[in-house]
Length: 180
Image 1 (cartoon, one colour):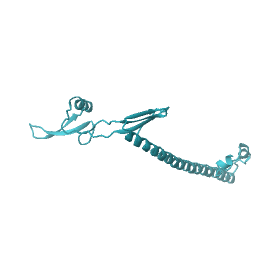
Image 2 (image 1 turned 60 degrees about the horizontal axis):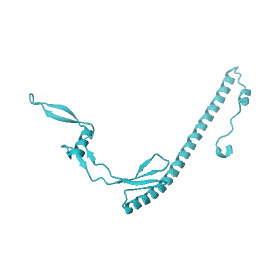
Image 3 (image 1 turned 120 degrees about the horizontal axis):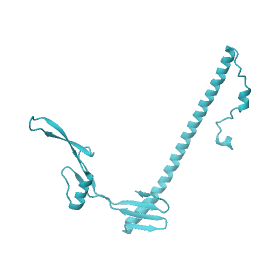
Image 4 (image 1 turned 180 degrees about the vertical axis):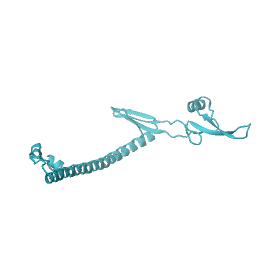
């Protein structure tokens, strides 16, 4: 059975085989012979590594093809679930194998230039007329609170309100919440 799984591998010599080889080094001819034997076994190690890498590549390629095929089937079935939920006008449906639902998305906030927590503002120094760099920290949590509580949107910040609903599903027995 192992030969069928590993046709590239040949049986390596047993411990008795290499212990019985002449390993007594008496002169330069024996040294040269031993170096040749060591070189042979190094080539064997390289061959084994090449076979291993080829097998790994083959298995990875096979796995990617199979996973792609299975993912296509999942996508096809999920598309049918989405279509059903949109036609039924329901927000959610809970069944023995899982739950499908639509979740309203929160407004998307777009912060200035680099969209990082800090951005730089240059302001003129009145006494010398030079420009100096000033750091202003944007408190994103406070901006969101102000927007949801009072409807206030600070200057320089954009809000995308028209976020469409996202389709999600949960499967019974799995802790995954998948959105499509």
